[in-house]
Length: 322
Image 1 (cartoon, rainbow, N blue to C red):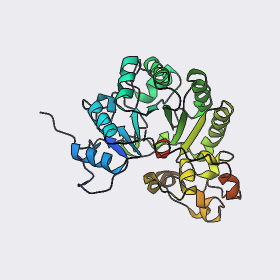
Image 2: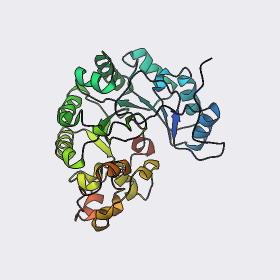
Image 3: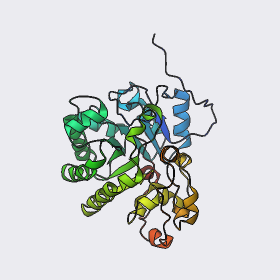
């Protein structure tokens, strides 16, 4: 028998959990930006039950690629039976171009599909995922999920990296054109963790990323598609500060588990938006320092006025990709 994946976090019954369930260490892609390491945790049945018992607002089923887990439907049904309101499947879309399979996940209890869509062309998709021939199937999967699940049931995740940075506006135009009915897209800063830790060259400096972020935000806003961001300080979100996940949470007086991965720097002490900003990622400032940060003088009230009405925890913390 091959060695079984271990829970290396030291978790014990009664310990607090994030609303995230890792069902398998297996994955059919090798995304260059993946922040999961060689020792990915596969949760024990006891821990899965504990997470579901602890979090009735939402839980996210992840991996690896959770659709490869043999017991994925068992645990989704268990979450639904246990009264979890929002059940999120974090996936690369494997197999979901099949309408029958999509309907099966919906029937089991999935309420939101979070699909990793890292590129907008076959060549780029192959390069970023280190696979071949999957792009047409993944596009078909997203379209199929939108058709099967209906409005506000499918979101995409895009991880900003140097391979795709200059193509971000084209990516935005692609998803606007190809995926009408998409709920939203989340644009994340790359984490130098796990498999990506040795690929520091994948992280663009904020100053280099800024013009492409701005063009992408403008296209998405103009096209009527909502978007959220994670890992970008508000001084690099000019005009779009309300789309920051952390800013939304901090405005409500809430905290997120991932805020611990970020931190304020000396320039933040002079920034008027510091009460709404968790700062840049710590792995980013370890790589580039903090001299790119430019304290804002914007009135925080102007940002608060633009926040949307809260949409529920599953919509704000619907799983991690990258």
